[in-house]
Picture 1 (cartoon, rainbow, N blue to C red):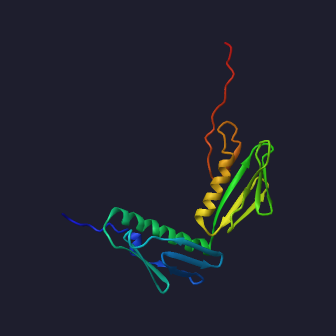
Picture 2 (cartoon, rainbow, N blue to C red; picture 1 turned 90 degrees about the horizontal axis):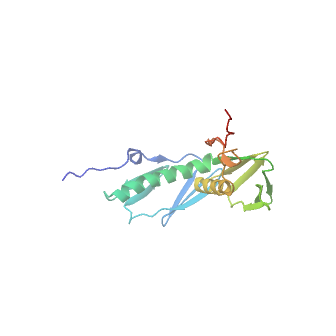
Length: 189
């Protein structure tokens, strides 16, 4: 039987660490520090068949086993490491748009206060490491950790998803809401 190495083409090239970024590894925990902050993530090594080596200003990923799980994790680890480096150098941003009469948002201390047509305002605590800004009907979420930015944005959007008839609710900036035609008046003929 022919054994073929399915190692990703992307994983064959090392990940270059930019000038202002520091990277350290300790018992599977990888900490990336940069101009915008720091991101820490735990990577399972050894048992999964993926090995992470840091040599100078380069990160090398290699697959120890030729198993499907280790091949899948190789690409996942590569993506996580690239996102961590991009996060501390450039950062990640999501923008949410609030649509609806009387719908509004404001920052109160470390909380995002949303008025969404309910009997009470909805208060959402802003996680450590995120910056949230509100301008008119746009909420901007900015941070180093891509997962944290995406998770917080998704939780805010889930508070009032856009409805298909009038489009009222909270949606992402580039999200397209498919509109439905409401009930139409029957024409007498």
